[in-house]
Image (cartoon, rainbow, N blue to C red; front, side):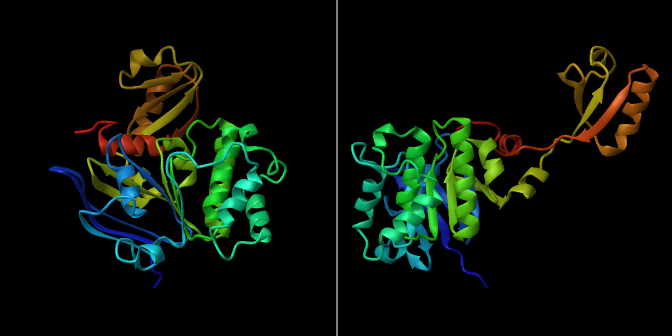
Length: 302
């Protein structure tokens, strides 16, 4: 049976009398991309800091590759790469010089490994330029290059797409999927960009008020949505509000309505009766964002 790369067991964290985390448990396996999501102040960053040994655990246990982060810190952290907030880069050095500095901290990183990582993050053409000339997306990719230089099997990223333009987000997505598939890396991503996590994650862990409320694969979470909208494509939606009060107008030729599949024929009959041409009916795809707001009640800290 496959052992998890990361295992958080019944984590509690208190600051004085205030409880920040309560009974937080989840696992992460090789090749998984786990989207770690929750409202502001829910405990995402605190959890990451406990995993990385940056803060003490009040109660519970974190094990990485079988090693306890508090009792066997050096062994546990040995195969971990992480970027919390922004990558630490020397702006006056080139990208290559930044990676060379990191490589000096390890015994087994040679020029071949640096070149391999540069190729992985697609910085070959700019690696000898000063970092001060890099775009934000390039700096993020260089930060990931630093984090994976020592061949970790666990990568932890806090808001990796913050400030990136659409092209930068796309490049980051492709890079992370590639690392999970080809390098068999387990990746934990904490992010507010739910649309991007929808495209990227294989699993989702939702935290609210310091407690995990659900951990599941992304398709399962979306299938649990309470709403069941059907989208209708018609000639013109101008008349729809007069005959279907619960309909939501999407644009001049589309509306949606929360009904079960068996109720569709009644809507079709109504449209025919009103002489409204119908071109297409399809079930609305549930987004991660919609499922998240249903489960958390919105971006609310209680």
